[in-house]
Amino acid sequence: LLKVIEDKESEIQKLKRQLQYQEQFITELNKPDIIETDEIFDIDLTGKFVVTGLFISMRRSDVVHYIYNHGGTVLSAPTRATDYLIVGGEKSKTWKYGQYGTKIRKGLDLREKDEKILIISEEDFMRCIGG
Image (cartoon, rainbow, N blue to C red; front, side, top):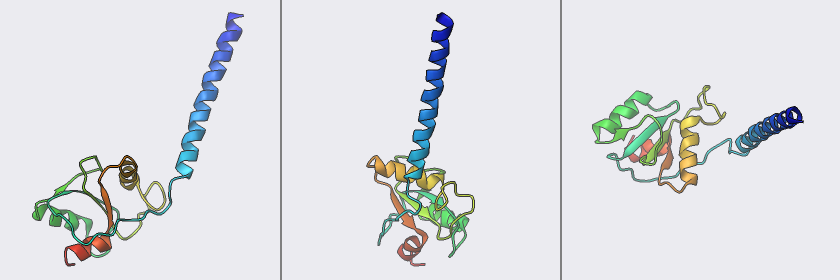
């Protein structure tokens, strides 16, 4: 009888794990394929930035240097301290979610938690810096 109970408990644990995987899969399916960026007209270059994606108008490294040269900080990934997430104008083949990658997903997750992060396009960034 104990062996039967142990087997059933093991089966229940397997089913619970399968259900968790299915719930995670459904959650991923319900996430947006294309993100909407925030339209901005002014940018505080002394803020904290994350830069992601492929850039059309300049190299990504040039964007990073521009931010540093104007007093800003560039972080490797979005955190609660991030002010701006700048998204390059060209989609990357390596993006995990098709239309965006993990940095953008993290930025979207932070916004869902009412964090202040602004997700801005390369186009809006260039317009704000006069490029």
